[in-house]
Amino acid sequence: MTYLDMEIPSRSTHLWRYTPWKRIHPSKVDTIPECSPLNVDVQGDCKFHDSNRKMEDLSEISRVFISECYNGMTQIEIDGSGQTVNINLFPSGETNIGHLNLKCKGEATIIVHLSGEGDWTGLHITGTIDKNSKIGYGFVNELDSNSKLLRCEDWNVHRDSTLEYAELSIGGLRNKTDIRTTLAENNSSLNQAVAVYGIDARHDDHHMEINHLVKYTDSSLIMNAACGDKSHSIGTGQLFISDDANHSNAAQVFHNLLLSEKARADAIPELEVLSDEVTATHGAASAPVDKEQMHYLQSRGLSNEQSEALIVEGFLVNTFSSIKNKIISEDLKARLKIYLECEIMG
Image 1 (tube, helix red, strand yellow):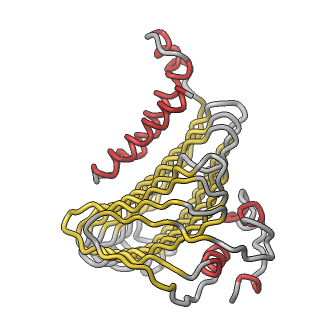
Image 2 (cartoon, one colour):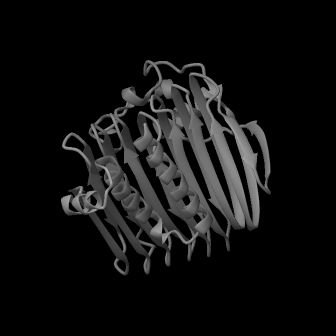
Image 3 (cartoon, one colour):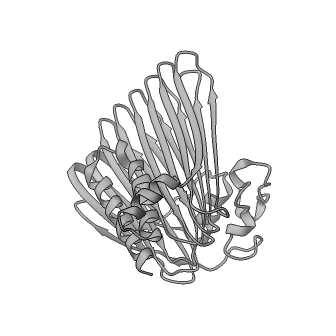
């Protein structure tokens, strides 16, 4: 099915409830605009080349739309022995499209950094984690504060493999992200941590699906969002455990820190469990800044802005406490600290 043959998704489905398709589309919904390819800079020990995207049986509207806007992709193959691969993405025009296809095996660290000033960016990342692999993956969104981002990711994790996934989202004005991970074979696992910081009128909508298809699979998802001014964060998590996935363990937790009365945060964990012998937990909590913490910091000579930034940093840094890959966790923590310092300094 082509994009123009598809129905515009209804807001009755939670995937598009908070960010309607027409608000994230770069132009009119019945058009496919001309797009410039994202500039891709790959650094590290891996094989990569550009190619045409193969025709796929896609059914989800954002993935179909991105594939029809631009049929190119960057193929990246990582045969890991502990190396780090940095992938820097830069918009090259007003409307930008990119597709990364990652094939990973062994042990490696991957950090994707998206930055620049394009008006609209569409990005599709597909990844395969081969058997007996341990991959750390970090994603940083530092787009310009007036940019829009539509991002899809699809990951497949195979036997005896682990994907550690960490994200820092601090860029863009309106962001719609859809991340789907499939634990396809026995003893596959996912450890996912997402940190979001909103200021001004920033809108950040994360939808995350985790599918346990077989026995002895494990997943953990934590999302922490700090929202100031009139910003809005949405986190939806769909956890699916099939009837063939006995002895699986899964958990998802959403924490929101509200920094102003006009800030909003929504957390919607959802579980569909078809198997009996599993452990599946979920939770969500939202709270304002602790006034006693603010008073304590200000009594030590810090300004109101410095005190709030320190609380936000501690809250968001804690997101990555479960990430064992130190290269990724330290990189994301450093970027967050620099960003907060720049905010204080104006």
